[in-house]
Length: 359
Ligand SMILES: NC(=O)CC[C@H](N)C(=O)O
Image (tube, rainbow, N blue to C red; front, side, top):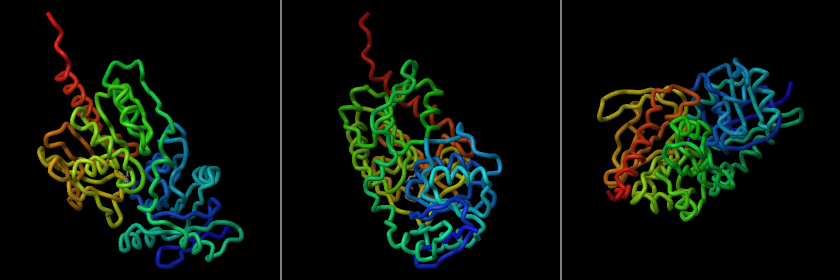
């Protein structure tokens, strides 16, 4: 059997069965999602993390590319109670180490008690516990990945749906899931995808009806240019954001963000809308949260489990953001209407600003 060692912050080493060889290090997190492993593994927000699935069997319906959220696997390594051959082969093919036959309840309990933590992994014929500990030693804190956007963003602007008749969206790609682009295209928008560090003049040149900040990995304060773009555009252009996007908008408009103990990752996170009193089930994947929205933003939705902000509106600006993933993939589609609301906000503003024709 292939050796497999998982070294947790503090030096505790867990042994498992090696399913895909290699060494890796990253921030150890868990998701409680019971399906959607292809979408989760290709979600760029998992960059620099090691993903533990708490659901015991991962891979039981195969691996299909049409369910991918990006063109590669983003977690640095994967832990599960049992991985099917399909998933293990996929991980091995992309060079992502994988370990199963370990007690994932123990791993999840450790993360719940100690918080998301540094982790080192070694899998292979001849690896030792020391190899995993050496990886752990070299592991950086998530907030020290100061240019993580460069690892997940497009290098050059890309346009989707150029012939569509709807709103023009400038999507700042901080590690965007493909489903966010698809959700906008399905609603007839033209989507200009910009690099995470795009210059304001380049974004301005496409005359966007809305500035949309995507999801993405790591600490929102490390996305300085996206924060600057929100500051530059918010007076004249509606702004939307998903997950990291909500955090970036808060940082830009006088709010603050903070790291959570172990975050929210799963597909059944309950969210309460404070105005309607309705609770919806949502897909989530985040380790940071808005701590204080500041004076320009108002919290409109909260997490039922811990009261953290899930939805935010602008007080005097046209701003609409969500901490969860309205695009689902994986998970419930209860919140897809976010995209309708965002595009309606953009079109109402565009109508209001249109110069009346002379009669
Ligand atoms: N899915 C996301 O956009 C994650 C946002 C951010 N990286 C966090 O962990 O909170």
